[in-house]
Image (cartoon, rainbow over all chains, first blue to last red; front, side, top):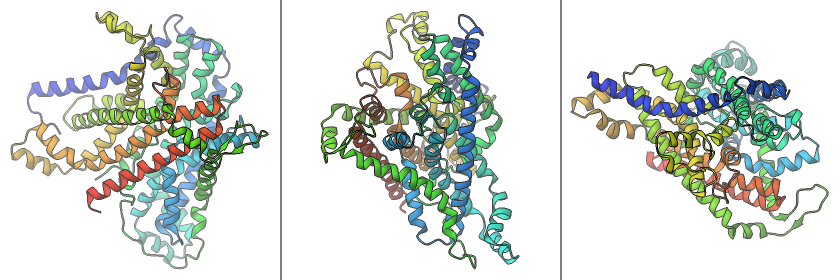
Length: 262
Length: 317
């Protein structure tokens, strides 16, 4: 964008980029250095000594994996239906789902609270997974429908001419073509599920049944005002998702750019 | 949302309410009437969870109830709503949401747009800059909240730095001060979401034909002029989409104020989400919390529809 020819200009733009970027790094630096203050790695040992770290990671992994699977299946089926099939009242159903796109989690609080106490669903991961999935699906369907519509219908018809039924067409022709969008859906759901806080806070009351986002809070409840330990538990929580992002960088950015405007 | 503000890649579809390729498909033969089965799982999930919740919230909002299954609730009509309209905390929360949206959206747009333009220029270490500005968007607010609490604590790093550079007089217990608590909440949000703004503007700029920019340059327009008069207007679709996301995100705000300031001091950082949570979980005013939820829902849907209509008008669709 900036067409810079002079050496001075090039230095200037580099400096400007650095000035903008560095403040974004500072909180992370503060987090890591704070977590090592005082007893150094001993702070991390203290967090692991609570004994819940592997459990919280396992629970978060289960919540994420099941949410991803549910979101993926619901989204792929529905996006195909909305984009390529004749369904009576299709647009009405689509709008019903679109309206749910703007749903704030807080609106679900009262009903979830009551449902969970009625059916004794507290402390069960499914009580977090189902609402998370329901909140995610409208968005991923919107994303995937546009992608499915861009697939040429001729391809599908060719499959039909060759005698494949609609399920076979979906499975053998459509699904293999949807990998780019599937990658975006998986990554988005992973981030939202792994980072979810309000729903686990409300549903998972037993400290033995919680997830990683509740680790700092749990640590505070065990050792009041131990700042270094709290920061160490924040680092432990942040690391996996940072690593996942670094590994899946392209798929994440491609997913976001897929819907960007012309 | 907040990513909880769910990210909205397919921005155009959100903005225009239609998908990017309006090409109608040719119907395949013998589809039968089984098409509904394809959308059924998603529909059951959304209707079962979300529409059930809306209905239930609406029901509870007309009652007085302490949330215990065994204790009876009492129908009291619009009393909860009447209380809400007379509740200064509610109006404060709305005001905070509005200011929060205007400030975070403006700052993010300025930084995100500028940074996207820089990243489209010749530059070293591009990959590093991109990672730095994008990493915050993947981190949980719940993870970062203790970090920001520690930074802005009365004895935190922020004040240490101010003392070190001789500005000790500016040091303050940032989160305990009514005047500075909200700016800190906004700062955290900007820190977290600029990466998304950046990546969307970056993608939008990639779509701009380089010949257009060349032409502008031949006509004698400088870099800044090109950016303001050509690139910025060509990104307007992205800007509008980001505004939609921002409004909805502002209404959804919960994690950061709840974890960093608990909505305080003295409701100075109260948002609808934190207020609903407090009324329900702490105060056990389920009817009132439900009424607040209904207001939040109406605003969220209204905000989404409003920006959509506006963008349609601008495009002349």
